[in-house]
Length: 113
Image 1 (cartoon, rainbow, N blue to C red):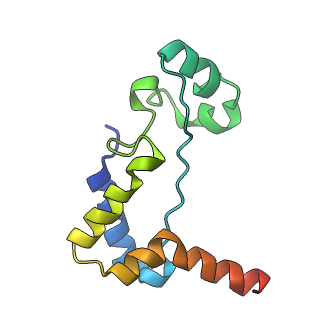
Image 2: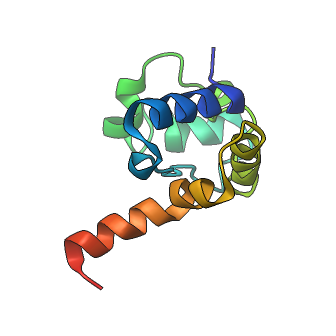
Image 3: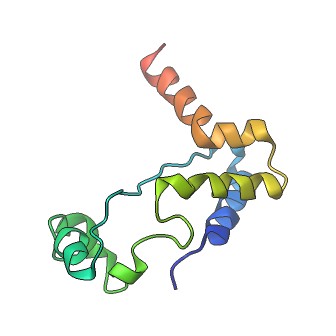
């Protein structure tokens, strides 16, 4: 089965527990503008679409029906994931680290201000 938003939040909670919130970051690889029909989607994103080196290795489970995490099929819905983290007791400041702060810190450390 495809993971749900709750599965993703469970994963974040595990990462926070194991590595600490300073080492957790969200990287949204959610392409917008999916073709609205299975044939159009398959031509672009399917295993034999224009990115076979990316989507091909994902296996037979990666279909039009299973193309995105349930509940986060567009970037406009990502905020719900952060709301769920807060509901589980993750502090607002830590959610900000996960959303962008940790990435920005690492980029500054590597490339400077």
